[in-house]
Length: 299
Image (cartoon, rainbow, N blue to C red; front, side, top):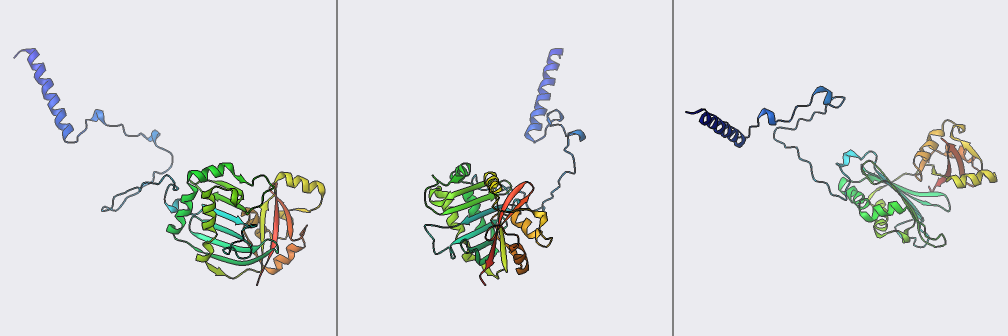
């Protein structure tokens, strides 16, 4: 056998073995991806998850309009807040004239019926909704029309219109965050639909006993703060100037705008001595000013 024929036979044999390995699922060492070396690994311990032998690990596909991840991924921080004070259309679903709603990702929900004119809390409802009940609310916030409304923010109109004022805010990881406010009549349909659904949540919750009183805070815009300081009509006090037994309640009101923070009667009476105008307190904390309102309970 000539030298050229030997070379040809050797090439054919090598090719046949390679084809056989490929059909059996083997990969040659040259075709394998290199194993990561120690210097290529991220710092810290590597997460380890060992599923049961009879259970496959499967990731459910996510809808484009729903927040990514399971409810547990964001349930501790996600939150929808609504404050609604109808002016033109005081519906039967809003006893007392105004309503505050907070819906959290873990299903914990609280609704407060109150009278903004009399500064009285009329009723408080709370409970825990199921994941199936909570999901539709977050689905609405992922719709394109809602995202566009978050970009606009204000639907107050010309300022000379009459309507039903509302304030809506969202926060949470992997969720659309922001706020929408103005007159509900001027808001897009997807926003009005979400507000409508939030306004009837109290019917699915338990009514709880009222506290003696409540304090409610909201931040003051810099322009208004400057005007109030120039006129000298109100007294601004630092949070640390208040008695130590009241500071935690006020700090909670500052950290949770528009929410109703319960007070004992003695704390309510103490705060009355700090009021500047009616039942309003003006507080400065971390270079930000806040207006705090005192509410009595209708017991």
